[in-house]
Image (tube, rainbow, N blue to C red; front, side):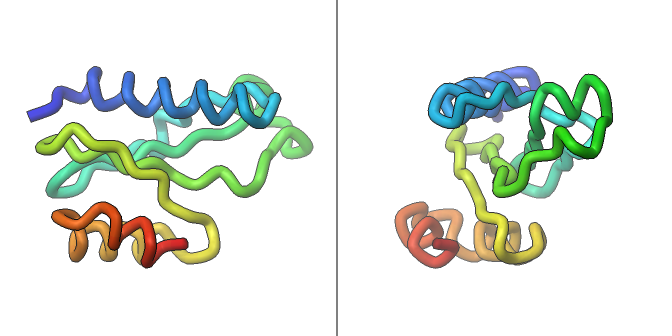
Length: 105
């Protein structure tokens, strides 16, 4: 079982990669981290927004990240559907990550 700190670190590493690719510094929004049966969902936003709460600093298109605490895997979700959709799809297709990725894109 993946401890919370390790799951969070995996999410941070992915967010750093997304930051590097976009040129925007992102931070996890800990107050929106949620736990479900098999894992945790990490949400993130621009560092400027996290630090200042200035609405003009909000960034769109930042899909929450699922970290499976039993498998140690990480999955970027999407933004076109409510988070519940991605969570249900993940629970349905957890043993077939490629199908999960295909169905949410």
